[in-house]
Length: 176
Image 1 (cartoon, one colour):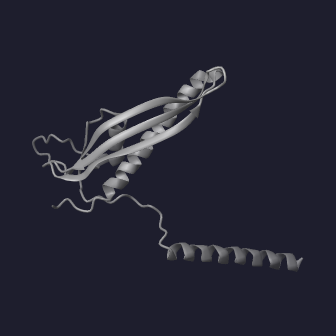
Image 2 (tube, rainbow, N blue to C red):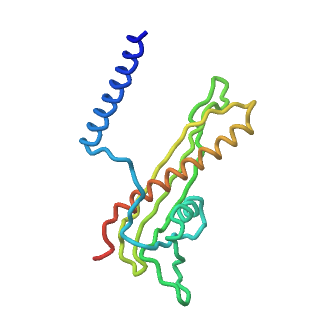
Image 3 (spheres, rainbow, N blue to C red):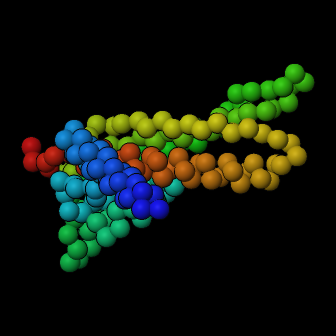
């Protein structure tokens, strides 16, 4: 009986030691969890304002950092402007069965954006983000597949916003 209790304690100690060794190696190689994005600017304008899904979600993500581009009395102009130049959604047939019926679609989202100062200085040249997801099609579940398509486009939109934010965080300075 004592041997079983003692061996259980040794197993627990071994597991803790192995965990500590793994954490030491991960810390030593430079691994760190991604924290909140740090920007070179305090405020930002997103244009076109809430016209597309990506612009609206980017505005929601940035929250109180977002300011309108046209300044009103008593409100300062934003430090940077993110321009969503193009947002395109496509649904392309990529697979058919022997009788020519659609079996698989590919959903594509293309976002082109740039970052500049309100004075017109380019901080980031226009960049394209391409995202795609495959979706199977079943005629007996058309409504379910349409709902899945909406969810996949929303997921791609969120992924595009995350990529835009990471690229904005890579801007080091607003100075010339």
